[in-house]
Image 1 (tube, rainbow, N blue to C red):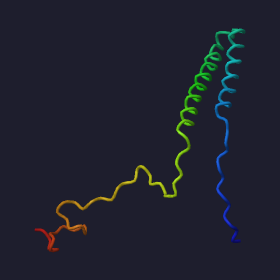
Image 2 (spheres, one colour):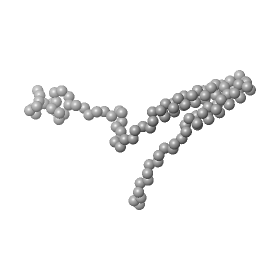
Image 3 (cartoon, rainbow, N blue to C red):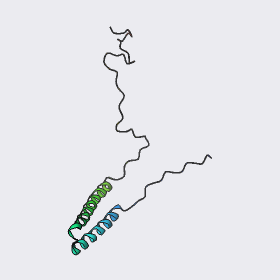
Image 4 (cartoon, one colour):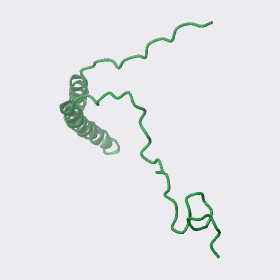
Length: 110
């Protein structure tokens, strides 16, 4: 029952640029075929789908190359606090820090 914990899986190393370029090549072939064959007016949106695929590929190339230039994120052993964590509140003016109203002698303020 007490089996040792397995190691965490590491991300695969992939060539994202080649994958994006292959997809862009397929969109380009589809676009050329559609421009040559001239689909009917009810199917003109096919051409714009290919153009959108090429634009998405250009964005993907920009993003992947920018990400690769920055390098991998630093590894830290500390747990990361969420960005929305609320810092501890300081005592309000007029309180002694215990949450009750009073002066430094502990007597209530009237």
